[in-house]
Length: 293
Image (tube, rainbow, N blue to C red; front, side, top):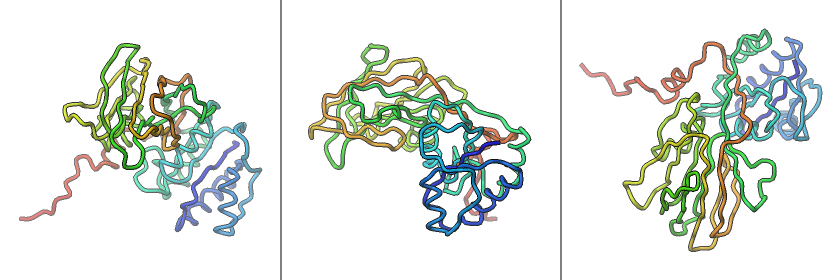
């Protein structure tokens, strides 16, 4: 099995887990390829130079599996790099919450054994695609979590004229607007009171950020809808962020958001369930109040 490893440069205190992963893959006779920047980090920061087949430096790499070693931010960057290649991604969590990177470091050995014997499932997750006359994002104009339209710095709110399938919906007067996938519904969208959507739902959600009108609520729409946005702002420009990758756009810009024509494949252990993740990560059903008699 040919395995690529992508990681973050925030791995202080995780050296033992990193070594465990490389050692286990080698014991299972896997071929290891490492993203060039992460390999430089390992060799420079930790003076650790694992035995590998090669480094990944281009956008194309013929691998059977990709491992994201870090938090959800690292997973999103890995998904952007994998792009349309449809290589399954396994997320090992060395960060904090970890909805996407949901394999804990103490599960590395057992999980890799399961992967090598094919005992796992694969979730296919929808992405959003941004279409705009400006080509800042090039071929990486897609997002697994959300596309965020946001004001810059401390400027006044922006006006986001919103159309669904060319039918006018509303003008959001707000600090921003998020268009999120089911995968992203537990990320930025959830922090602005958007609903949680199960991964199998064929929907997207529009969640305003600090709207001027308190009765403007998040809206769930079918994933096959085309969203057209036109943005006006007093200071002349605003931000568009694709999973945290931000670019500046001029006021009066108009662009389209729709479902991408490919998906991201996420590796899950056979016994993993989304509802278990909700209970574990969000402490659903857990009473943290002190018990008094």
